Image 1 (cartoon, rainbow, N blue to C red):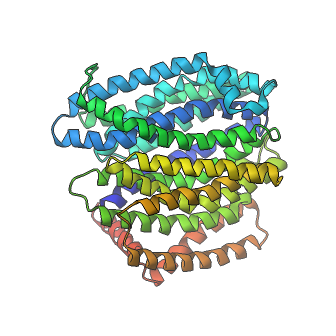
Image 2: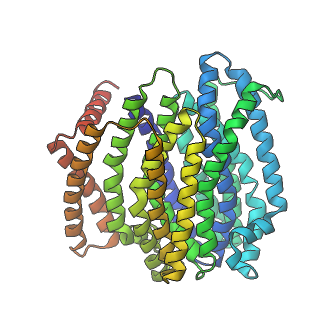
Image 3: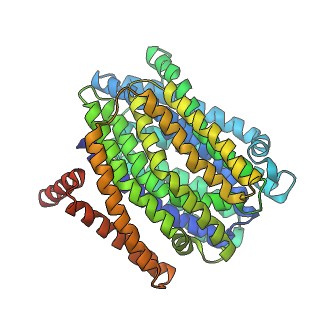
Length: 497
């Protein structure tokens, strides 16, 4: 049950980070709504964020974790960390400088639809400063990888929460007097604190390393595995860029609608799926792990948590968007488009989560090429489907999340047929049957509560906890085995902390 324990620590830290992230986004929505300013900021911030996921917790950590685990087991930790840290920081600095110089061309490439307007010029201005965030978040994600291997998941996961908190405070202090400058300042100041929060844990773990330019077999092996891994995670980031590119040809605010909706969608995905996948990667990288059993548990955990999350997001999308964003400059029209996008995104939640878990299985064995191909298939299908729905069928903004939701099936299907190590069928089927039954009962409850005419705030505050209670109560009555095991462990932990 180490997988569940590690995933829970990661999930708790990520949950707190996401809550603070919603407050941050609510602040952005309050001051700037879905306007050319918010569009420009989300375009500019997407650039370093994409590189962050590519060079940070994405491709780099997928390769770094198994190699660092091996170095730790062989007593080569300090030497390994020194070499990898040096090359990693140098790479981040060079990419940052290149990004600052080429900001105009990069913005023009990812959002061609806004060229020649005020959104474009503002996005270029912001991007030149926001690229500096890449250096800070690069340090943070390196520390995250080190601490995850050592079984420390909470603080690294919460580091993003520190960023969100400092960003929000900076926004509140500066937005009224300095306008969009507060957005840029919030990113950079938040990035500094995001790094600093990891240092006390690193000191307690007695992690030490220095600078080393030694290019030996360790570094060469990391680079050999990193190139295809970066390709895979680069493809994933290409998915976000495709959405931005297509949305730039739609109405002003379309980029912001997708951002606000995707942020809400990322709550269950980031808390559960990424937590399970990161924990699974760390466990499968160990020599003594039972890969078949861990994979089965991971799949069952995803089904147990993500199916009801998907149903809940779909049914409560408008109420949730109203509660989180509908104030200040965020209009009724903004609610309509953001909520519609969120409800469509939610349909692909389970499939995206399972794809994330299967990718961890391949990465743990050093196979970085198969997840790349799966991601490439997903992105190609997403681009084609999004263009078809948004422009050829004329659905507009709603066509883009439709393409995203459907494409998640493609990547999952490819990984499923390529793997030789699959989860055990019987426990998976029983979990699925009981989860679907409990979810159906939960949906009936939500329909009843939505029909009572309560305000959005009351609906969300009452519906979500009520749905959680009725869902897990039903699983208890159905004697769902994983739920009973988790409950027993939680009780034991509470009685004997």
